[in-house]
Length: 410
Image (cartoon, rainbow, N blue to C red; front, side, top):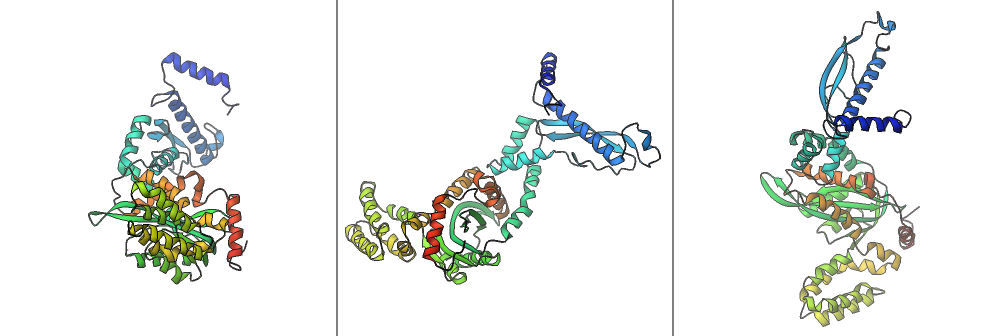
């Protein structure tokens, strides 16, 4: 490009634009004129390639096909609408690639629409943005059709083969409003993140709950099994009703671990603000206990100290106890990675940012489309996989291999 457009040539173009009062950008700007010139030049080159000879070349005589004038059409580009001349041939067999027949947008516009949509802008917002900034008229129906191109991609993502073993599986959900049979109801979209044997984190799938908990979770876990998963060492979740039983029915050797942070949050809700520091300190002695016996003594002391004043906080611990106690058998390196589902909650936080602009989704497919594009757009989760495996994860995986001998191979 530096050879084709040296600095002095660029300076000359800018100076001529300023002298003639032509703006640099916008619908009638210099960049738009250059875009038209480039598109038309590429179309001429494509026609030459199609026919096999240059304009006016005697080699074209008797070939049975030749140039047959040009048509004009307006194309939406990144710099705004551009009116271009498209060459045609007598046989009508020319199929331009840079701007295909019956297409009125260049690829950059479609990519822009997908990018804006994945960042939470509604179709109405995108329509107004394209018109205001680029002078491009794109109806909401058109924008919806452009975003529909990812539907096949979503189906492939949801059915792709998975690894046989995931040392740790995190599951958490985000509440959304969806119109169903004319009624807007609250549903939950659940995201599953699996950590592979190399320490990389993968978004295994996203499911929107439509049925009762037991049947829904059985379907999710069976789906993971059918896609190739044979073993999960630890499943970390937030006391999701029906999930522990579903996991154990399909993966009987999996240890279900409740999120300790969620237990703390749920318990502290029953405590007055003035007592929260004292209650938090008492609860800390439970989950930092060196073993089960120490935790039981700490819980007994917690019940004795706060059971009369805050029985709800004590009930939270007792109800979560069976899914909490596996945590006590783990060494410190492993406790750090199963202590909380915050890793998946950080992803959900970013997904909430792009869903908050919508009062509700018209259906489950529309919600899934936005969730998938949002996941794809998260910088560290390109393709649903994190880009790094930290040293802390490698230490945790080595600890897992010692804790579950014979089930984890590197």
